[in-house]
Image (cartoon, rainbow, N blue to C red):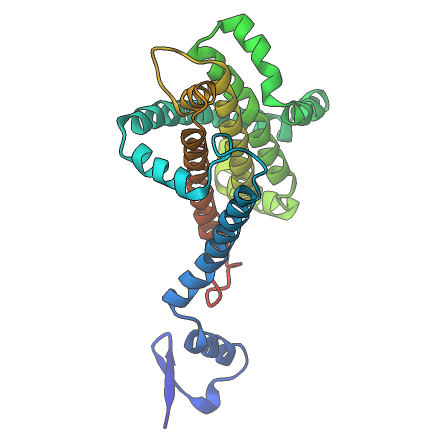
Length: 294
């Protein structure tokens, strides 16, 4: 007689019914890890192949001269040389340091501001709409003021990165706290959670999905602000990805310019993958992730 075991208790097929049967069937018929990996990978590969194909077709039309719009073969050949050159890694180190420091500061400011505005009615009335207005303001518009205050310096880039990312983080926190069920807050208080304990054990975990979404959006704004800053604020003593992009444009080196743009795109995709993994981990912890399909 076939049997299954749940929590160490043997059970016959006749006793397996309802949700138990569905769960066991889901485990037995779930796709393999290799198939799940391929299912997640092939759409990206197809989109990449389509983009390269369109790029090559535009080059074949002769719309622009090859010196202005080189083909994929020329660009990827230059990218290969760029990947093994010290210039890439020196520039990437500078850009990554600026991104990490600026985003960390934006997260600290955004979390504190978001929590304060979400829980204090006076601050909500005074600053709620202002945070959204700051979020919609193009980061490039801050650079004249940043250069006026800090000249062409690291501080000017840092200033714009923080202003570009912090409002998104703050809005994520505000929306997350707003959608915490009041029943959870009352239950936490009844169990003795007060002050910081209430935020740590009740509000923060419940608002975590929205906070992560705000962090992801904040990173996108920070990365865009940083690239704009490095294009405008070129510090001669420190190379960076944005500065190298500016040099390639000034020297009419189209293959190198497009190779650098590919590097910028890949960095953005890698960070997006990290946030996607964090989002999956949160959904799995909350029990809203289909184990068989993900």
